Structures are given as structure tokens and as C-alpha cells.
Length: 263
Image (cartoon, rainbow, N blue to C red; front, side):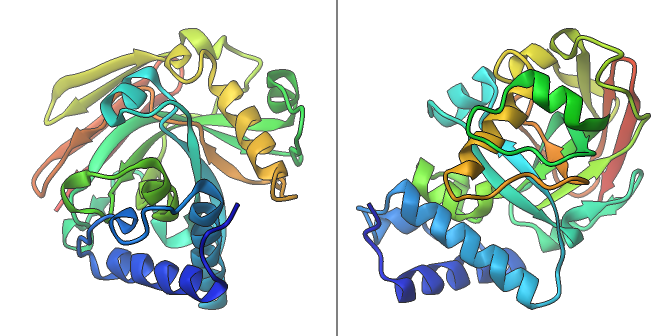
């Protein structure tokens, strides 16, 4: 049940988006709105999405957050969340990522899905996701909460577009029929040293389960995952803090690697 007025939703959306665009931290919004619930939080996120589209940004993808047990434990939460990816979030493979536009970035290793057919819930399952997937590619998501010290509760992070900020995809494309995604291993390296390792099963036991869950969550708003959508299925590893001068490479078994440098 929503506790906020339409004006409050727009105002909070503008507040959080300004923090993102100006790269400045703010205190979590539930400090001022303790009754803020999930419905309100997603309403704020969708208002921000509409604001970006009105400005001419394209929404090119979606992301799932807090999907791995490592991540849930790190953030002390029990269920995944989703957010959207705007066109300017995408950085090229090998890119120099400008940390002056970010607050306190962290990186995590993910497997990205690109769809060739729409996916709609409720009742979407792994088999439908695999059938609707055109290809898979390795990805590094650069998350960046707009909240001070990366501290927040679940409604606050949902309203903040699930800490979305930048992402890099690369490596080779793989067919979802070529491998068992549960056993695909990934290594996240920072400045040449492995800092996190994991396997696809860390994402709700199967990364495609995460995409199915996304379709089912979107169905609650009568939305679907369109064909041609890039979906970051969730961090396989815990998030690792980065700063200017760091080089990051993620290697995914059978899919090559993706690298970037922070400047």
C-alpha cells in the first residue's frame, strides 16, 4: 500500500537522480520517510526511468541486484531487487571509467543475458528464459549507491535504482545451450590479483532463475522484458571497492574476459 503522494514520489525521484548525476552522497530516504514501502520505492525508480527517457536517454537493459548469497549476506537482505540500465551506463570493453562521475564505486562479476523474444510473467521459468535468450556475455557491473557510506535499507536502494551506475560487457558470446550456467566459473581480478571467485550457481542457484524472477516481478506492474534487452543477472561475487588507478578484469569460463581501468 503506497504511503506517498504522487508529488512526493516525483520529488524523491528528482532528489536521488540529482545525487546520481552530480555524484554526491545523500542520506537514505527512509530516514525522512520511515514508512516508505516497496510499492513507493519502485514508484520512485520508475519515475526516474521516465525522467531519463523524457530527457532523451534510452533504457537499454535491466539488472537484478542482491541475488547471490554473498551479496545478500553482505547487504543483510533476504530477497533480490531490480533496476534499469540507461544507455549512458554502458562503457566499452577496455574503457577508462571516470571515477569523478561516481561516488564510491564497487565492481562485481556477472553473466549478462541478451533476449531475442519477450519474457512475461507471472509463471516465467528457467526453460522459457533459456529459450528466449539470444546469447550470454560476461559483464562487470559498477555499482554506486547514492547513499552515504553505501548504507541503506531495501526500500531506499530500490528507490535509488538498485545502485545502478555503469557496466562493461565484453569477451565472447555464448549460446545458453552450450553450457550449464550453474557451473560456469568466474574470477574477478584487481590490479592483476584475483580478489573474488565464484560460479553461476551463486545467483539464485542458476542465473536464468534470476531473469525468470525479474519477468515475474515486472508482471506485477503489467510490464515485460522486451526482446533485445540486456539483463545483468546479478553479482556472482561480493562487490569489491575500486578507485582511480585500479585495473579490473573479469574472466568467465568459456566466455573470455572483460577489462576496464578506473581513472
